[in-house]
Picture 1: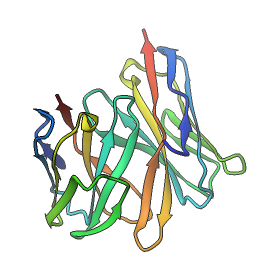
Picture 2: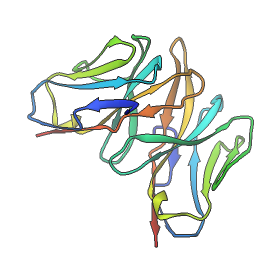
Picture 3: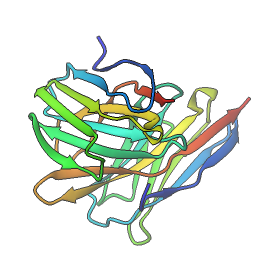
Length: 114
Length: 113
C-alpha cells in the first residue's frame, strides 16, 4: 500500500506462532483491520481493533496496536496449514465529503509448513 | 447464496476491446466498491458508490466507467483495454461508514493480450 507497509513473506512451522507486522500513517483512523485472502478468493475481514485499544484477543488471534509508533501486529497462535494465505492490514482514512476510505497494505504471504 | 457475486470470473481479451464486469450484492448494503489487485497483490481502491451516488473516484483513467443502476449493483465498463489493465478486479460492499467491514466478491481475473 502507499503508506501502509507490511513485510512481504512469512514462513512458519505448523503449531508455532506467527506474527505479522504493519506500519501505518494516519493517526486519525478509528479502526484498524486485518483481512485474509485465500488463493483464488476475495478478502475477508479477519479481525479489527478500535484505535483507543492497545490489544484485542479473539481465539487464536491477538492484535496489538502501538499508536505512538503507528504499529499494528497480528499474532496467530498454534498456526495451522489452513492459515496459509495473504494477510492485509488496513487503515481507514476520512475523505472529506466522501466518508471513509480503506487503505490496504501490500499484504504478507504466510506459508505454513507441516 | 453468494453475498457479493461478480461475473465473469475470468476475462481474456485483446488490446483495444471494450469489456464489462458485473457485480451484485444481496446484503442490502448501501456502499459498493471496485478494487484493483495487481500481480504483486497490491490492492487499490478505484471507485466507491453510496446509494447509487459516486463518492470516491481515485486516479483512474477515463476509460474506466462505473455504473450503478441501483444500490445492489455496481458494474465496471472498460473502454480501449490496454496491457496494463491486466489484473484481478474485486467488487465489494459494506453497510456502515466508519466501520469498514467489507464483503468481497471472488474477483474477476482480466487478461489483456
